Length: 303
Image (cartoon, rainbow, N blue to C red; front, side):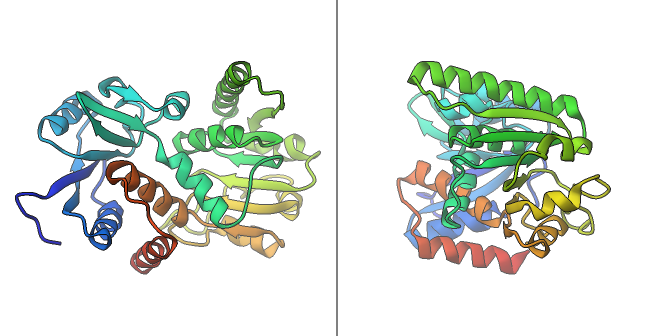
């Protein structure tokens, strides 16, 4: 990659950012598309600096930014406009340059749904159980509701956090139904992960989305289901499971699902998918399937 005076700069803000693989991903996309652009990381020390970072990036002519933890909500007051889905979720991970300021989007949602579609998994009319209630879980919960799941059960170690997220999704679904005259009802419930059996006992075939850091490298011998009563029966009823973790590619949780007879998918394709969607928003260039697969293989070799 050659940097010239004409090179358009894009980047990532967050804290920390040194570990990110986004530069390798975005610079691969740019090189293969023949674009004169470069993608770098910009560490932002604290929340008080987020506004200055966004305004400074715009003043310096930065073409666009990704936003990672912990600032996906903090950037919203500093953008000129927010895409409706990102506004509904309350999370922005991509800033696109427009006249007078950046517009905020959430490509995590599209990355997640795209990863499932590439696997030929559709969420409509499925019974989905989501483990976790943090930032990634929030995005995925709204994506599940938007796709028309039959039911959504949110489980978390802290029940109150799961219940709060469930209530937010209920309010969002009600608002969308009223504005678009939708009639389909989605059953949404939440509670403690310790009550897994009681909350899912009436679900015969389950799609599970694992959204916690349990099993993330280097603590790979950990699963969110460790010590949970009824976990074995739950695994036997799991038809498909997705884990947002991509290092390792197969977590202890996914291995348990596979050994119980279920199909699985790790988080690497979601990572590439959200990056590809950001790239397209910035440049107007779509990532073809062979390029997508090339990016997955490149990152797989590095992890």
